[in-house]
Image (cartoon, rainbow, N blue to C red; front, side, top):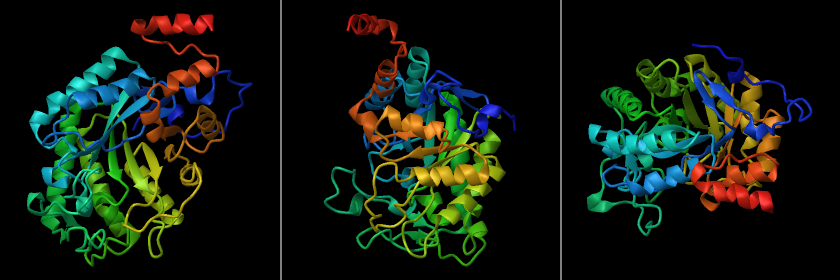
Length: 378
């Protein structure tokens, strides 16, 4: 694996040492240079047709790239049709999906300085449900599909019952992730993120709340990590050496008997040891139990703990709403990248607005030069 000092966490630096605000300092993962520390976090949009993305995704992702996010992440993109959350979820399970995604990637690359990554996933026991704005019923009924999980345990009382996966199922899903990675390369993505959080398939293997298996894929934390690590290795084998791979995890389960932050650190170390380049640190959503109501930046301590314990890069996510928060997180060494989700929905141009507010040239696209003139006269 290539080594680069920029991929390693370093001691916080003062503004006096570097006049560039922390959020605007480039960050390198393998051969990928991300121009700033702000990431458009993956968010399900439920607007694909049979997994195929279209104009909505072009505008949604393209506008955040135009807005200046250093790394634009797609929504959770499923490696099988029966691995979706809902019928509206995006996919990369057949060759026909490649060209629509390539259209989005080509736009981002040609029109902006942003880098673009794809989050690959399988919904597992959280699948076969209606889109988010139509959850009057939990399941899809006759329009649904069989769902699978490490163990035959429902996500919630009104969720469909999953079938416990066989060894053949595990091998087949692993192969699907690898094939989707090949298609992601064909589409031109800069980075792959494997979704190992929020109770989806890989995450459910990692959590003792969802994984009650008695074979080599259940029991100890090492056994629970076996399938996610097999998926990672299969993807790494087909993904170019110079392109990085991220893993999003739930660092804790927020429930008695579930994973703790100590487990989150141990799982992250296993991922790093296998070759994962950065861990995207989230939490919870492994069961239907609500996590406690907590203040903003409540997940950043988990990112910080993992970063300090492993000495490896992390992303943080969760209620980050300002440039001041991003700058503080980066300057204090709590994470290397900051993922903003809902705030990017509210303000697609968050990064450019933050640059102007901090006395930097937002480098507006040539089509928007009148904005620069307007701001100069203000």
